Length: 131
Length: 131
DNA sequence: CTCGTAATGGGATTCATTTTCATATAGCCT
DNA sequence: AGGCTATATGAAAATGAATCCCATTACGAG
View 1 (cartoon, rainbow over the protein chains, first blue to last red):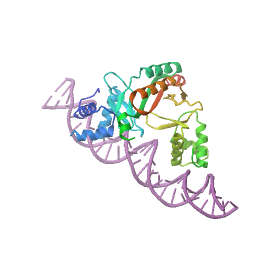
View 2: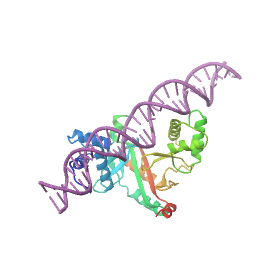
View 3: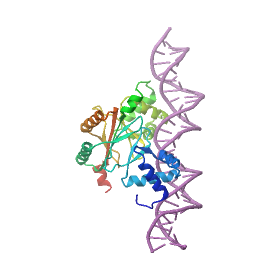
């Protein structure tokens, strides 16, 4: 995260690291309060942007269009299967898609091709819980 | 679309069919005005929802999170490569991804797995126009 | 320690989308 | 053709995430 390491950014980093799943900025803001380290909402957004820019976060959008953030695993996986019911997320091995996206990009005459891949479903636990 | 075929819904359908690329609800609303068939914004949103529910539209989100709609091609393609610069879209042959998503879903213990795949880039025309 | 610069925060703002509710109308029934 | 009613419409207000503004604070280099 390039800039100064302030009390607030440290807290954002710490709380975020404690989440194994996707969190919204708003939720993170609340959790920071709960953790006794109040951080302004603007600051939360700014910290998330910075982390996103430096590739330390993965971002998805939920069905309402809200952005959800999650620290990127050390192994570099960037695509997930997310439970629409409980929100639990599981990184995916997406080599196949990665290669496909690259090929399509190359064949298309487009440059700077980027891709978004998201899978969602209902996990076994949730299927059992609410049939 | 299920419900009554009103003047407004007919117009939404018609103008939408005339767009070969993704359009936002707001943009569609303006185009309807321009076409001399004023339709309330709420009605535009309602019509789009109805069409989405019945699978007649494909939806993506632009980088701002705004929803963009496009009539689904007859051949059933549902994934696109979109120019971030001019917005032109091109349907993709996504069998590879389709199969991958299916396999991941099956192996994961998740049910009702859905997937989103979007590619974006800068098309040849735009690359030439603004280097 | 001192200072300049970057960061903070809270309130205001933006803007897409949704809701509300009074009014209009599609389209079935006779 | 006329009536009737569930459905659709639209203007305005509400919602809510994300961004902007700007006076104040505090990191950290020197």
